[in-house]
Image (cartoon, rainbow, N blue to C red):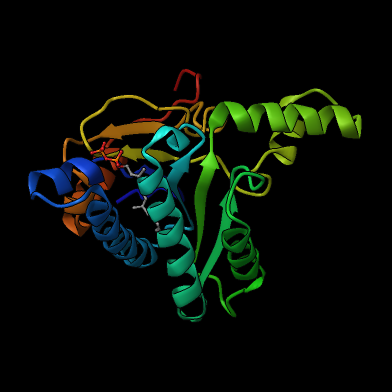
Length: 226
Ligand code: FPP
């Protein structure tokens, strides 16, 4: 089976999953973290090299304050408690997005985990936190101007948040919506898209395998005639 090297996921549907069970929305996010862990395990087994997860978008600040705070706490607590274990498992973890609006204590944990490097890297997990595709494009253009860089595609990539990381081969969005929602705009140019109605907290290993099977049947032409 042809497997993507870089998989990106929009983990949508946590709130609806929780609501259907009469639970607070944050309960859906907690369950979502478990699914993210399972997907990480599956990616290692499948020999996927990069996994990018959309954890918090530049627009998510518009959510109720209580949910935003709870999400920040969830992220910070998760990183603090699991950084060492994840590194020992062969994971490298890094973050893309803005850092200037996040709680300082969260930024400190992010920087700490980014400095850890596994002895033998099996999977590089990139968490998008306060990330927006348009915001990344503007930040990158600013860097291009500041450094007097050439204005071309490869210089853009090099100065972007995904400098050393190839474009995603496959994007999965769970939760029924069929849109990109300001995720990796630049890097998705030739990415295969896969949408499923399954809510993220219900997305299991079998669902991931189904998405990858679908991907493996696609013919990627990158604009050329084969
Ligand atoms: C979308 O569901 C989900 C989010 C905005 C947050 C997802 C974040 C996580 C699962 C945490 C990831 C953290 C780690 C450490 C892996 P939604 O709230 O938009 O759901 P809805 O569309 O049903 O309202």
